[in-house]
Each structure stands twice: as C-alpha cells, then as structure tokens.
Image (cartoon, rainbow, N blue to C red; front, side, top):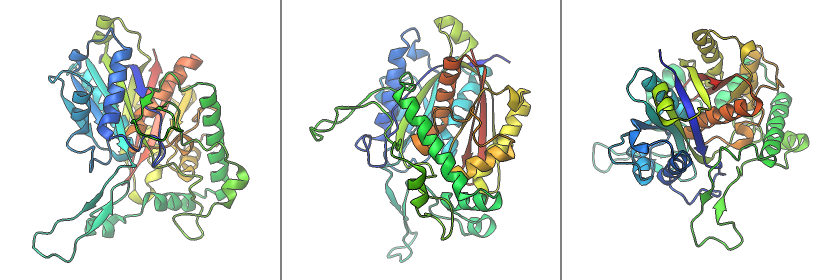
Length: 403
C-alpha cells in the first residue's frame, strides 16, 4: 500500500485556562494554524487539499457546526475544499491525522490538512430542554470537560467516574505512589522548561497576534507555551492536596492542565510529495485505537501500543522517541510499567509532556505527532511512538518514521 507522510506542521503556543488565548475563538485558532501552514509551504497548492480534518472534543460552543469547515473558510482556502470534524475526545487530533493518512494511502486524495483544536477556556455551559412545558428537571453542565447528560444505563453498567477519579482508580489498582507521581511531574516540568529555553519548539509554533485593547503591559502577540510551571519543586508538589478523592494521590501538580490551542499538519501521499517537490518530516507507519474499561481509561495506551507494534512489526526496542500524553502522572507511570519501560526512560517525553505543556483536548494528539516528528529530525533517529489515553475508556497509538 502507498505511504502517507507528515510534510509539515504548525501549532499555536498552548495557553493557560483564562490565559493569553482566552479572548480568541476556537475557529479563529484553527484558522490561524491552517493559514500559517499554507504560508510556510508555498510549493503546495492549497486548492489541491482533498479534505481538512480536525479533531475537537467539545463542539458545544464556538467550535460547533463543524469547526473544521469554518476554520478552513476563515483561513482563505477555496470553498471547494471540504472539512470534517472528528471526536475521539483526548485523541481527536490523532484520529484526524490517522483518518487523513488512511485516505491518502487508499487513493481517496493526495493532500490533506489534519490536526485539532480546543478552546477550553471558552467552553460554554449547556442547558437541557424538556419535551414538556414548565419542566422541573432542567439540567446544566459545564462543557469544559467530563460527563454531561448522563445515560442512567451508562452509570449503572460502567460508572461515570470523572477523569481525575479514573486516575485515582489507576493509582490504586496499579500501585502508583504519590511520591512517584510527583517525581514524574517534576521531571516533565524541568524537561519542558529546558526545551522551551533552548528554542526547541520554535519550529512548531506560529506566533498568535492578540486582540487590540488589552493592557499596555501585555505583549501584542503570544509566542511561547505558558502553562510550564518553572517554580515547581519537589517540596511544592508534596504540599498540594488531592483534588479528586479524600486520601488520594492525584493533585493539580501531577495532572495535565485545562488549556487552549490548535495544531495543523499537511498529510500527503507519495504522489503529492513528488509532485510538489517537498521533503516530508516523517512517514506515518501505522495507527491503532482500542477500548478499555472506562473506570481505568488511563490504561488505554497499553493495549494500543501492543497492537500498533504488532501492526507495524516493530518492537519497543526499535522505538527511539516515545510521546506519551501525560493526562495524569498516575496513568502515565502505570502504562510505562505495564509496558516494561522505566519511569525515567530518556526516550519518554524528552521535551516534557502534558503535565508541563498542557492538554488542549482536541489538539493534543496532533501536537504529539508534530513534536515527535521534529524530535526525530533533531536527533536523526528513526522511529517515534505517540500514544494517549482517551475518556470513556479508549487508547490510541501511532508510529511514525523519519523520512
């Protein structure tokens, strides 16, 4: 079967909840990275894009009504270019890339833009409607993340633990201590700070102009990931109280953040690579999604990694870079241990992970692939494995190879 490639990718810096990107709409964030991707690749004719596929987990606010289509139009792509929004919660961006790669391989198009967006700061509240007037059972939910309008059958059969509660379940079931979680979190912060200061993310990030009329003391644009907590220390992390369970071990310090951001990648077939005369960053070798028990959704990467390695006929020993989405330190450590990977394996998140960089849900999977591709380029290594857990009990993993 023909190959599919990541030609290039652009992302916004990742913003804090209520931070620098909070005044920007999700569709504008997605449009911005699409625009910058097209501008940075003048050899490629954007009119040849067969589809724009973006992941987005919310889709309840300004990201509604197919944000991929809205974003591509706002970015100035021809109206003839279609757009699709996909939702696999935390792995939405990775699913978007997998969909594009699959389509390119089977000849349904030669050029795609794939990625993801999440504007968690601006996620709205939603209110239920009743079939009858003067209802007394109206419900309201914050759509930033988590369950809403829960099916009673789902609660009875599988439970509806929050993301944090599932991390506590994993920590308890797999014996991950609070101390180990904090150590893992601190290492993520340190690696991310070093990478940021060294300009490691410069090639990934597109500067984002910020709205006029802000405070004169604030910069006119946003250029660096702002979630990194440079003042983190072992002592500081140890003082934080558990958030999700009395006597638990999952804290704000050893969990990923609630963040804003967008990412877009050019995905091309062999035919498009040759036609446009571009040098790809990486070949997409294979991608797999799996299901696990919702109550331990954080363990999804384990079967996903086993399956993608079987699909690609590779072993963990052949993998040079591992981008494991750090939803929580508890699940990250449990997954690594189940896979036989050391807690401090240097291949794992060499530039920090979501605990330090942040986790804009629909964007993160695409961000992992972009960061991994750039890391392979920087180190001249061959294979990278990107994997993540997914809410409601799923896991996803993708292997790429440096071109």
